[in-house]
Image (cartoon, rainbow, N blue to C red; front, side):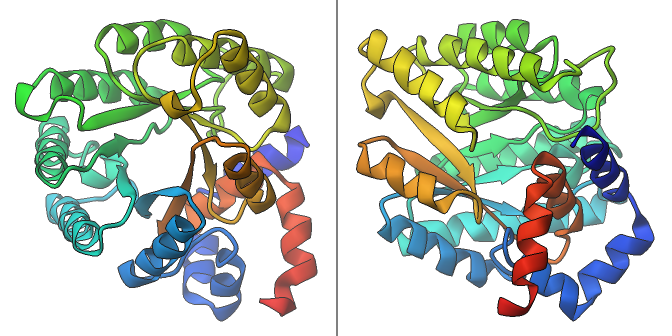
Length: 308
């Protein structure tokens, strides 16, 4: 499985394969398992359906690593429109953004300015912005921007961040974020990182995920435990029960199209669940990272290719 994971992560950077998949009918059919659709209205329709099942939603307009300031502003405008549509439809949904989609690699100041504007808009509409985490070379600058935004009185509480459990540094990062009162979405991590910065073995990542989830659950801040792993979920539920932590103080988060049975079961048990719903034409890198996380998904897609 580690070989397949590495292969999918390498392929996620293939420009030729990305171009082919994102413009072909077969690619669109494959992506529909994990991507809500190409247009905002596709994602809003899915969000309404998920809300009716008792679950909240995070909407992500797919895209990353823009190449110009104009592209960054275009990406931001799509999110501003999304915030307005969420408010108009009274959806239980927030948004998730990547700073490279907001121009981070062109100008950190540009990305921070755009993120601040989105957080201000979210705060004004009673919403929330999750700033996604990307490769480890961007971890520090992402956290610096999130902490500066959170320090602004007018948007405090309207911005959160993602922490990846496979990085050695994540415990120290979470301790700092908790001190600042910043909401965290904890996941295992989906990028191809060297052993110098990340735990190389799954057992080590799992152990760190459990350790970090306990830190989050024990804090007064509302956090998201993002996993489809029954063992990780069981560990969080057990810890919460031992500490008499009410299920309303945290949520489990899962990806659209993955373990729908488990999502429904958690709702029946009284836990909060949020489904991460991505959409848009730039779906290929996200799709390949989902296959890297769980190569068995490829077998599922192969079996069901002609049933979509």
